[in-house]
Length: 627
Image (cartoon, rainbow, N blue to C red; front, side, top):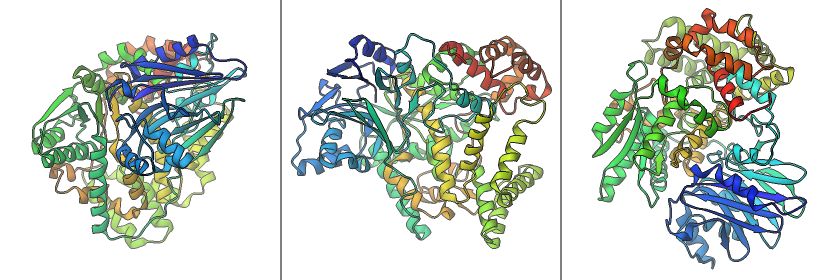
């Protein structure tokens, strides 16, 4: 896990001082070393966090066979298998790193090597003979890759702030992306970023740069929907899930440093911790593992009873618990925004930040986390709505009645009115055409008194309409892909920045390539079944997870008591809100915003519009952004 940087001069060779600045501002991503390589118009840079082969053999930029030069951020988890396959074809290796496998694989298979790699990555590989720079990002965008172009150069890096060092002028906001964020909180939904003329290479895409001309071409190399759904029996599906999950966790444990785990008490992180414990027992070595959890004194947001249930069923777990507080958040906000590069829509990010800060204090370099399970296994409540609408449109009345009945039974403690409202929304979406849904969506977000302070352009409304269409997919597999391409990409952004802020590598076993491919092929009826989300996972891991976790149907994750935090600190936050609104003018009308902030709607703060303004204002001031 590292940080990368690259410069291609279109008129003159890039200066070393320019690369020095790009690498210095991501020192946190690679405190174990740095390096540069230059050849004519190209200069590559790297900062290293040593996780595999801790010797100098793992330093980058890495030269392979006098032809290829590599800078790489991430992990190729199946590097041992690829290495054996390549050795059989005559390739040789001088290190024990996963990095060295990349240029050999590219030399052997060309861009098709991406399909053979299982891992998380953002890399740039220079072919000295062809003078071509080949850049790639992993299937799901776990590791970041940003780029920009000017008349003088093409540049890329692991974080946006690296690209900001290239100009002495203040950066300009991408008004459309900013307005969409302030209106509904969406981010990371396209190649656009919050900064004008800075782009991200999307997950599953690659970029080719002709070094002699600086011309680039972006292509998609991975499509989640390329494999069709396959019929299979429930027992076969459960057996397949269990086997692939075991292999995924085993691969993600490959490291030459200690590996810890985030433990929220939910199904996903608990599954990883219990599987790690099982594998350690089977291997016969030390079983002890370290976990870190975010907890709260407010029982409505606290998951300690579930965390303790997991710890109680495993051997020799050392659990650390952190207790984030609002009075810790505000002093840390500027530093968090600097690391994130862009504003974030919820204080839940602070809970994750606190966990990785504790990992750093404990000396942990690698942490496992449960990202990716909800999107693939229908873990979010909205998947019920999609399922009910889908069954309704297909006329599957018996299945609809069965799943609705099971849903209401499992949530019998939920207010009946809320359940009926949820069902009504699902059926309206089943019957209402997309154009009508878009109009209703716009009417809801522009209702009088709610967002009069936000001056949102027609271009931004068009963008929101396109996003609504992406989330309104009528097919379960397409709906799941929309969640992965929009919501999950945002969560992976937070995961990367929160962990790397403290020089910790975050790994996400549920996004293992083989496991993800199998989940996409499984019938959707195995993901929500008998009213239970993640049904196939619960069935496959019954003998591993404690019963209290298997039968848990509520969902929290890395949450904070943000609603009560804002209600309790409403007056204290007032001057910060005013400063933020002023920093965002003219997108935000400061006077209208403060009038809204003093209204009963804002005091309830149920949709966190105030937080989005506060965080975006801090972002604008931190990076001196021209709005």
